[in-house]
Amino acid sequence: MSSTSQPRVWFITGASAGFGLAVTKHVLEAGDIAVATLRKPSDISELASKYPSSRLLVLPLDVTKPEQVSAAFARTREAFGRIDVVYNNAGVWMRAEVEGTTEEEARRQFEINYWGALRVSIEAVKFFREVNPKGLGGRLLQVSSVVGVNPWPLTGPYATTKFALEGITDALRKELDPAWNIKVTIIEPGMFGTRLLVDGTGEPKPIHPAYNTSTSPTKALRDMIAANSPLLGSPQDVTKGAREIYRLAGLESPPERLPLGKDSVAAIRDKLESQLKELAAYESWSSDLA
Image (cartoon, rainbow, N blue to C red; front, top):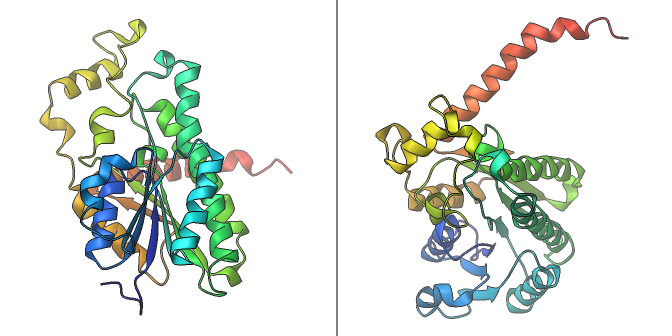
């Protein structure tokens, strides 16, 4: 059960599969209330049949459509009167070289992963501040990725959307009045066994001809993926990841960021150590610029 005196109300985007579905299930099993939003509610009809609408409210939501975002929050207000946690998770990606990605494909990822997530974020903050009982506040859990800190080859456009989301989230966090009691955490998962990892927005795009060489990093990675190389490591358990996300939402003083998974911790540590090393090496270049 929830550690609070009454069940918490969770508003979850992208609840059709992966972390969205796993978190929805964990929330319900823990005794809390889930508002599961997704483009096709029929995708979770089996789960919905197991719970009354007082425990699981399933709503249609395409985050690229502003009117659907505001409608989903309004419907949640009608049903429960408050939201304790917003799990902002909906997203898409594709595997392709930066040069092999069309502008249309990159823009589609931005429309969902950045603009869609930002729409949800703004509605969440407004709801926490103006609808929830005064002082209750709320928790905004913003789903980024390890590649939103340290990109892998073939993730360029997707990683860029997560870099942008992390930047706007950091700015938003610094703008919030502490009196509102709104706490925001960016979650940076590594490789988990989700549908997003397996197929993203469909089959990976063919390799860009310039990168189809024996020395190409993207060619090497493509070959490893095709061969299911053990060097890639094994995907981590999304159910266990959902457990830790639920735990995060209960912390009185949550972190600004939560790298999730050993691979995420290692990759982010490598990036930060590299940046610190370069910062120290070139710090003197800024010493006489006044």
